[in-house]
Image (spheres, rainbow, N blue to C red):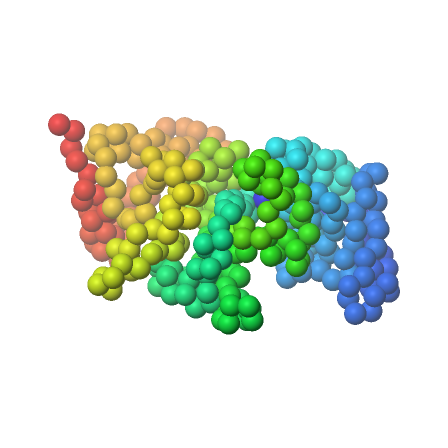
Length: 362
């Protein structure tokens, strides 16, 4: 998981960051250097280079801190690493520890200064059959998703089987939602070294250490996805985790070909996707199209509550108080804005379509 923090960097902290980054650059002119920086007795490593959008990057075994230049809005992003999340059972302890380490260095702008910007969920499958199935170019042609979604696949030439073996297949975008299937066992041995995962897998493999044929199906949610659903904090995401994960797995899915049917959207979901969806609980599936169904009176009640809440917030934002006369005046102004909209007739037609399947209570 990753969160953004609306904080102000103190001048002393900026100086410390600059000095540590210069030390890291001197350690390796090619850009791979590191330098130690200690903040309130917590040790971090400073990288010689920042990332896109961040000027400094600090890391340790639990978190990655990406810090933008002074004066940037929401300059601090904290990525909580998977091993530490598993160890602590969530991000709450790590958030507290991280902010304590930044005490007197990064000052919160207000009381509501934390936002969720990224979350990844995964399912790990031991499947030699999928290893055989995953040939480069095969899975990339079996994605079912919106035409605007980016799709990519990567693999290597495997001399033992005389063809290109697939390693990774991806659909979607990191800023919104992305689904990827990749060879996790190969990634551990060749890149990450996260051998602690062997201990997690062993109970489901009769104690066997699985170093091959383990595939990870991963769903990655980005800030655009959260903004569209008004998800701001990890506990809000946790409350609807099943719904959003199933939504992503269905919207970006692999399918199994059916002979004689050229329409991929009618093909059955791949067994790995099907099992992941089952684990989430298919009863929690949320609608993915634009039509709304349900009881009309219940939807009207929800709509009224939403309008009332928005109006209350609007009054506090504009007047810093609530009075009935001011609310009525604002409502009249809002109605004028609505009716003066040149696209008002078209939007009415779209609203009529959206609610065309709503049933009146029997």
